[in-house]
Image (tube, rainbow, N blue to C red; front, side):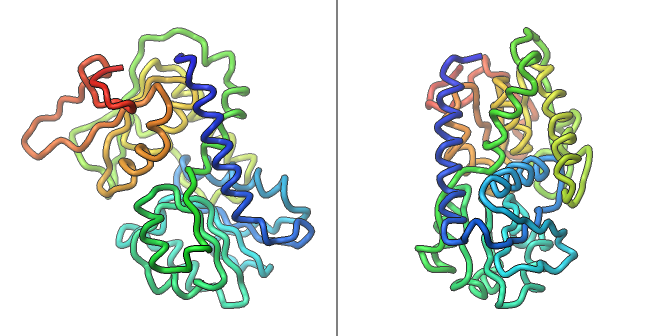
Length: 300
């Protein structure tokens, strides 16, 4: 494991924590709040566990509600992620449409594209964290600049907990390589295979203990490999935090490339692969084969 990983990860965690503190800064810690997890796969579970842990340390009373339920408090925090992307996903959009203007909206780090009307509806009553510069540039055209901030994905906050709970596995030597590619609308190359570990379970993630069990199970699986190659953003984030050599491939829109450039590229054990043009073949080089790396060199 590169020695530079721990301080690089610590810096990202510190910046993410500071952004979450900004998100909640004007809400009194004694005021009851609602937390609405972002439903989805195990990557979303990692986000929600991290967000809920931050809120637990900050607020005396948290009402946990699924998106199918109405939040009972004025201040509503929602887990971040990639579910507010038009036209791929509409569940967060639909949930926002059910809120009324008595609510104040606080969104943990997200990738956002489109859904302008929903964003503008809460423009004066929201704070939004963006997990990549492309999202940040867009959101600042929809709501006042002082109501949004650039951050990193909230799942980075789980780094210390995962590294502690899997300490006995992290330092075990292995030569195995994991290939984990999605099989949905964000997939670029249908020929890529492997076990899509993050899609092994889908849920609303309103039970934080169960959500963490799902995350630690996926992390334990990834820790068994020396190298992880994936187009799942959170598969890459978890693998990289565990010290595994990590190759993140592009997905169908800007999310993976933007989050990699903004966050994952700062970790010394990561690399990024652009989408292969149609007809160029399906070969995926290993790190030694000359992958573009986080520092701009040809190999790691």
